[in-house]
Image 1 (cartoon, helix red, strand yellow):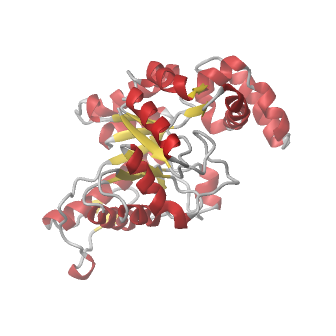
Image 2 (cartoon, rainbow, N blue to C red):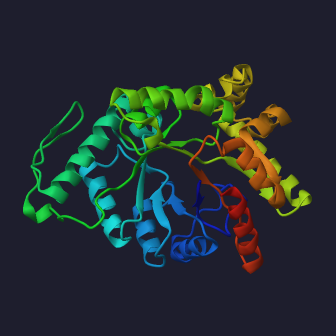
Image 3 (cartoon, rainbow, N blue to C red):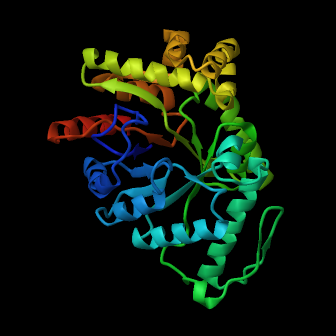
Length: 350
């Protein structure tokens, strides 16, 4: 299992980044080096407050072994050609260590934050990835750029804008997914599917894996070619007293996800639709302080993995070792003792 980290190390609640504690972009290069030093397999960046491609370029300058990736970058606001170039440049500067994770975003953000016309995301992302790969093929092999689909027509690539071949042209593409259509598209054409933290073991077994397999069958792929990547919701701390405080934060995060209609299917598989509907009512009324009260211990421990540092690796292994090929995990690393604790957890996870 490859263990990935969502930076910043040392500036997170364990397993979480709260909106009020954003990453300081000026510290990213150092933090990437810390991640490499403790032995992580990859460091990932999600697109929230900073451009993920710029962050990863900084990280490439202070690392030499660790994989660098987006988890995730928003696809649709960028043209496939623009994303192809960002990925190509990062693959060059990192000497083949870049991984491109793409997300589609929900309709409200696509229309009202990015100002785009909405379209069904699964067919759109299929066209997007195929268009991007057509651009890469043009640059690497000199293939004439001729790509046409419902969403994109690309047929112009002049020498001035062609960066030419690189040493590591095979850039892995992962797709963020939770619904059956997106999981199936990932099975069709992606190297991995990146799952949301609300995806329980039961949801992965009963919803995700069958959908990925259906997609793989469409293109005659072996489903084993598609990595299942999980960003679990984790509550962990050095001791029980500190863990109790972290659990309160994690319970509130589960409650937020519970109130979000886009994630309802992950709770429905456990028969919790009625609780999710109650959470949505409270959310619409902005009664945020009441939401955590809907998350009892059964719900909490089904969605989140909870344990002290000496327990957490065993619990994650029990839940994900036979289901997931890549797992995001991090704890604060502020000194060498923290680093040693992290290395011990990583060794047990692997």
